[in-house]
Length: 161
Ligand code: THU
Image (tube, rainbow, N blue to C red):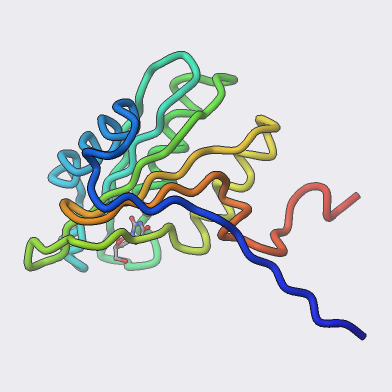
């Protein structure tokens, strides 16, 4: 028996002004898009912007429902819309931002488990990683190279071979 350790590297930027301009623009787009969330129950507004290889961007926001489990996260809204509007076009990056009920948002949030699994499917489908850019309305920004970094031991189509 042996102990196995797994770790990953990500970048933390103290402020979005230190990001590459295209990443900063994507995150600002996410910050501005939280107003389009439909979150009357949690009052937690999330926006995700998918940047495609053809340069297009697609916005998703969380869409809640009186039957709570029916609600869908911003990330999956954006990924489903991008894949439907631009089938076969690769995904380069996704930026996520949010605002809580008090309008506060100073630390990044990271995608929930279902959204990580969804991102993993899109990575697998396109045979390349999707850069993940996470930030609040203000404060530090995290740059993650691939969802597999934050979804260790992931289950995929390969697992069924
Ligand atoms: N939510 C997202 O849209 N994305 C995340 O990364 C975390 C959570 C939504 C789901 C629900 O509408 C609300 O935030 C509270 O969980």
